[in-house]
Image (cartoon, rainbow, N blue to C red; front, side, top):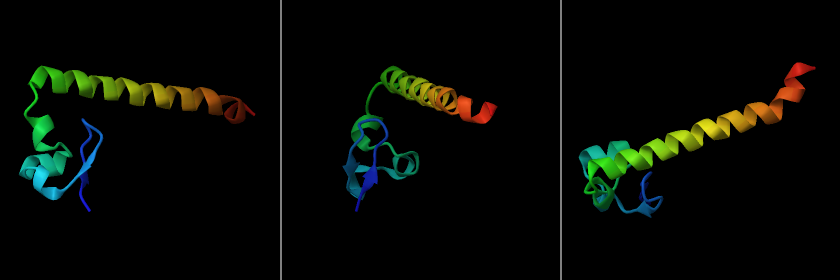
Length: 66
């Protein structure tokens, strides 16, 4: 059983993660990407998370108002 890489979205064996990458859930291949590209991917994931929270609130709002 391996670990999940949050950038490439794959489950890989433990050997594919470095010490810090293990903790941060970033495989060695993704850790070797340019910093700007990783930052752009992370910003996209943050925006996606915010939108999911927003839509959840919108969907639940009619129930919360009553």
